[in-house]
Image 1 (cartoon, helix red, strand yellow):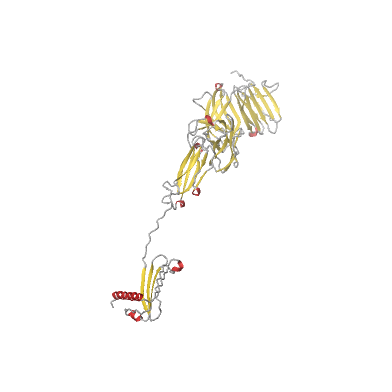
Image 2 (cartoon, one colour; image 1 turned 30 degrees about the horizontal axis):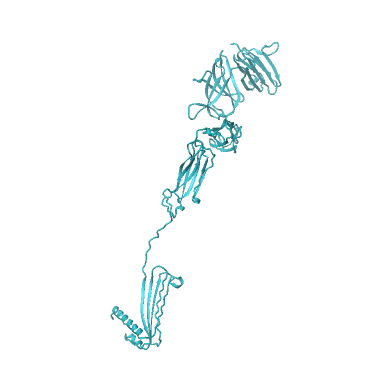
Length: 579
């Protein structure tokens, strides 16, 4: 095969490693040179002194420059570094020999069109497709490596994928397979991400069955942090919030403090730009950053989200980079779905309450508020419940869409209402979330029915007396007194007193009529007293005393009436007491 290389061909790396001294100071490093190489460049750094190396070709010939050396070999020294270039090297293995027990750094590059690219892929959780890892791979993660060779027509096989540490020591070696269904030169294998920085190399054979190796020297730094950026339900609209929701997971063995940060090229990010999370081993948390779209459509901003451990031995940070472009919301299909709510828990009951005690019982209702489409804009309570209603909700970012989460809310209300309304809005519609409290409630006055009572009838105690004397007084008196105590059962006492004065008192006792009697007096007293401990009616204002005093002149008519009454009384007493 004719080599058509030129100075414009890219440089590739074949070997880069730390080359320690071997037993007795002698050691050998083999370097493959394939048929696509137009120049082989061997660089040896002796660290503390210029290295005294020997380089041999595949036939064991010592290579050196000068009049007695090979014409295609040049050598140069730079302090502790020696450099050898071999133009159009013969394909095969070259050997670097060291006969002293010293530490060297060796790097072998070549000019060649044969190279490769590698992608670290993971299986999509929702399908069998592979997606490229965003950011850095995580320690212990099982990934698929897709290898694409740049000159497949000049390659017989690509056999191995090799992971090497930063010193060039092999960590793992995995067999590559052809990726069926893809174009020529695509291979794959599965690897477990090691717990340290690593490089990727491939081994194979060129079209002449000569061994080749290509090495990507850029170190890949695995992390103990997983950072997942959630899908975006809406574009970045002008003048609106854009929520970037993420989940960060601690894959380390102990408690780790993780700092998450956001920055973007157009400075659309809204404070706070940094958040700190304390995560135990295996724990995760979901949070968000916010952008606010600018006033001009078509502006693209590059966004970087990072997650960095602050209390872990592994200081590698995780990251995600993506771009967003502002759009005019008026050009999109209108959002016709209003915000909604869902009751998740009810604590308490209004069963059995009345208008008189409804304010003594409360019902607590927990609910989720959400929106499908452009996201929630506002949540408000404008009811007239006063102190009888308390509505609260968790803070949220305007534009929160159902796929990004819900707003947790709580309504605490007494039972003096059937329901309460919460007003919800997005950018195109308004809706009402009705929260039942006491569905059977009917407004009205507080009315009560007094309990039944038992009434005890009063007892009556009455006495009548008639008294006469021989006084010559010309006055007669009749007195009636009624005293009512406090309410309740009681007794009534009536007293009738008849006093007769005059010269014929004896005649009144015998029932006779004495027209010459000068005067008579009748006094009647009626007293009613309650069973209360305080029976003094005049003090409590609950008794009335009547006293009627009738003084009459001694006339024949009054004397006749007096004796007629006496006769009647006597007849009554006689009928009750025959003796």
